[in-house]
Image (tube, rainbow, N blue to C red; front, side):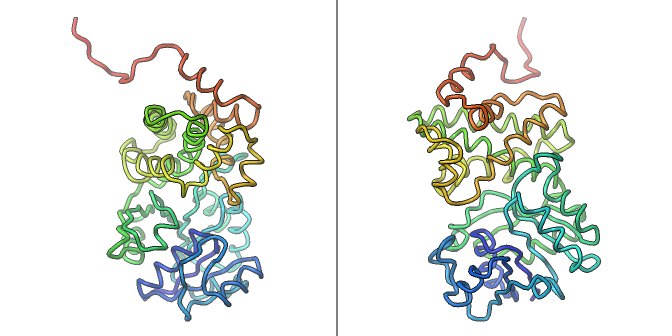
Length: 337
């Protein structure tokens, strides 16, 4: 049994807290919001973000960060990406040398172009940082539906230790050393999912969705490989796997926001209606910053940025994508004479 500090009480944090407790671990859940902790203590259920998932009587809920960190074998950082740096900074004074922090959020910091694990390493240099990512909606994990996911770490021993902590008969965990590739796939797929949602909102069909998923993973892989990640990662669970589920499911807040934008609502109106953090909005500008830095073309992600931040109509963006210069799909194609 391990002692786990869950830093963040959103839908994903609560789903993982329930899973980890089921695995026999002692879980303490932290939130900065006193009203959220009061609700969890009273109801043993997050009525707003993960209704129907009951939490055990012996799970601890606290607003005291020290209580959630001190003596814990593993800290799971489950706050939205836009709060990762601030929360990691608050953790710095509490974390002990070598204590493991597993980041489960997805995003890239816009002004630094850093991945979330890089931010955590900068803010909490004493910690051993890992990531958990893959096609895994909180709503389904909370219900115990079969899910596969990946834990990434620099050291094999860390990855295998976490694999044992998280894995059970309905939650299969693979390991990877390509932390960079995992995080890029996790963050950038949210931008492509916005595009997929916009296509749905415009009334387009399966052909369009398949095109966006296929060419979207090509864009994600292109920038990832340029940054030093492994191409194989983007063909796996944290690449194409995560992209498929985020583009296809109504659990996806990014797809839902995209649908609303495709139907004519503004980015701000869509985010307000979804009532949850739409991570793709925060990663979209960062993706274009990476494209410029590494000299790669990201046509779908570029159009998403134009729609979100420059008022371009979604149907016009689709038209411009379709009318781009003619291209070859496979770069090293061998033609017969």
